[in-house]
Length: 354
Image 1 (tube, helix red, strand yellow):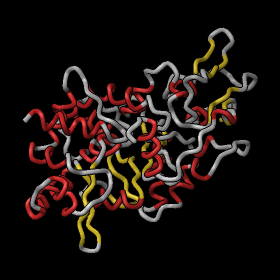
Image 2 (cartoon, rainbow, N blue to C red):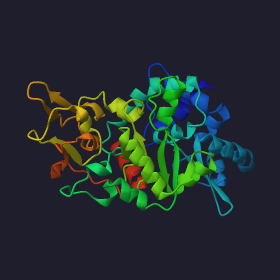
Image 3 (tube, rainbow, N blue to C red):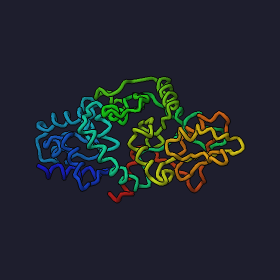
Image 4 (cartoon, rainbow, N blue to C red):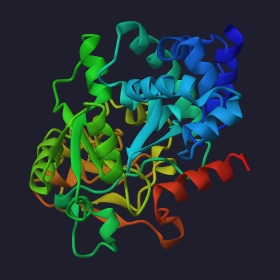
């Protein structure tokens, strides 16, 4: 039933994150590893809103009692969302990234990893055609200064301190690289998930619940290792990823773009005070986007603003206070959507899905 997987690929491509077709058909190989034919057929009747099994059954033309155990199993596998509240079950379609893929962190195989790595450049290229992105970059705490026009939703500590439920899960990007013998050795438990998302992860046996202080400690450890904080692109984010440029599929793929700064949602960029700079290259070495180069003749660091994504890691390693974050121009600043629903609605509008 090749057709059911092609239909599912098209169905997923009509979600905000997309699921573009490739010449090799690698996207179909991925779906065959994640869904049985019966599950793929049933997924065609799901939408990105929680619905009862009765509503799904009516759309699918199937018996509710027959499909309910299949939907529950799909929820366990992380190919759809399953929520049980007040004794009632509801099910929802998941987009591929961010979504289905991240829930496979405990189900990875070498075959799936190889296919995903073949596919992800096509997916990232497709996603970055949108003005609104799923993730944004916020500066690390040590890089924040009093001159910045920075909002609470742009500060990692404020985001974490506002959460009542926090879960930490393994980073799927570093895990898949480790499985393939290409791990970077950096902190593994770094995906911070909040609120309802944390409860869903917990129900699937992924990750563990932690306190606000433990979450902040993880962030501090990650920053020391050069990890970039990337919350979901909303004022009330569902998660914060701590990403490295060697394993993170998003960072390492946008690094190949000529101007990452034009793609990433960030309101800040680094500037160097040439009089204070000694040309020590510490900032050049830690920059995840290769945005900083030390001029050999003048022995001073220079920032390529087309490549700087405003993470502030360079500020954390400068012993001479020669690097600082500055606000982008008012015309370049971006205000994130209020919540993830609004984020995905905006992406869907930009894609012409409605």
